Every structure is written in structure tokens, then in C-alpha cells.
Image 1 (cartoon, rainbow, N blue to C red):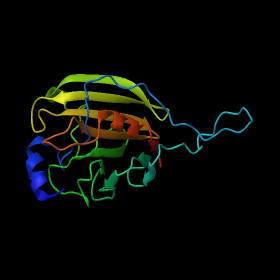
Image 2 (cartoon, helix red, strand yellow):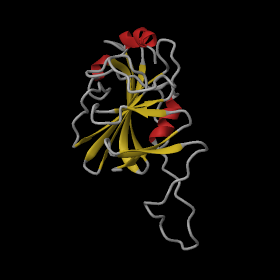
Image 3 (cartoon, rainbow, N blue to C red):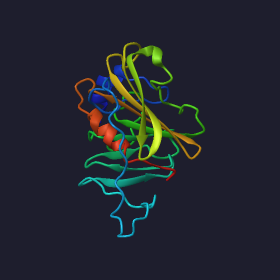
Length: 210
């Protein structure tokens, strides 16, 4: 993303260490029905599928593993990951081809993924769950993410930087860690990003503890 594009959207983004905007679509709708990964083809023996069975991927999707965030997921064609190192408390999934390297400063647009030991909020991300007073139409639903129970929140930000944007958040506890996903949906400043349904489908590919 060029400096000129960042300057167009900097006023919409609020994140304590770096901007945290992500994805597109309507966040105000109810959470989609929970789904799980499809296990690999079963043998003729009627045993329960192994948890380690390799899931089938949608055409063109590729697997990605983050040792830093201890999570694995699948990426649709054209989606790329940046900032996946110890220099940031989160990684950024770029669904719109906006970047060629980890962006700096405020104004990033993408899907932010972070995990922390325990249940404390991640450093550097302003979440719906921790700033509900800044949102209207907040909806909370219990969902399953690849067989693990979690929470999906959505809301429309009405105050502060980022006002006018809709956002989706996922919080999932697994293996002593809490995994967070934050996405701004519906686009921002004329920039087209992933649809909310795409974000939901992406999150369903998560495997925790990678």
C-alpha cells in the first residue's frame, strides 16, 4: 500500500501500537452456523476420524502456519501474511493486495490475528470486547471454530477513530491460550476488502496450538 493510500485511511483506524482494520461485508448480521473442517477420506473401518486427519481445502487455498502466534490456517488465493515475527504482537492477513511488506504506522487494512497465553487481551489491538462503549448494534454469539467453542462479536463503531466502520471479532480459548481475530468489514475509504462471509470461512480453517 502506498503512503498516499495510507494517508487516506489513517483517520479511520485506531489501534494502540498499529492500526487495526481488516476485511469487508456486513458485521451486523448474526454469526453463521458453526462448521468444522472436513476430515480426510475415511477408511472402510468405522472408526472415529483421527484429529490429525488432513482436511480438504477449497480450490486454490494454501496452508500457512505461524510459529509466533501458534496457529495454522488456510489462505484463499491472493491472500498474504505480513508481520508474522516477534516485532509485532499480531500478524496481518492482507486480503486485498495492499502491501508488499509489513506496514508501519497507523492505517493498516487487513485481518489481524493474535494469540496470548491465558486470557488477557493482546497488546496493540483495540477490540470490540474491550471497548463496547464505542460501538452500537453489538452482537455476541457462541460459535465453533474447527470444533473448538469460541465467541464471535460484531458491531458498528460510532465513536473515536474508526467511527463509521463495522467490525467482526473472534475470541477462542484453546490449549491455555486465547486466539483473537479482528476484521473491519464493509470497506473503508473506498478500499475494497474481504467480505464478512469470507472472513468467517477463513476463521473456520484455524487449527490451534500449531
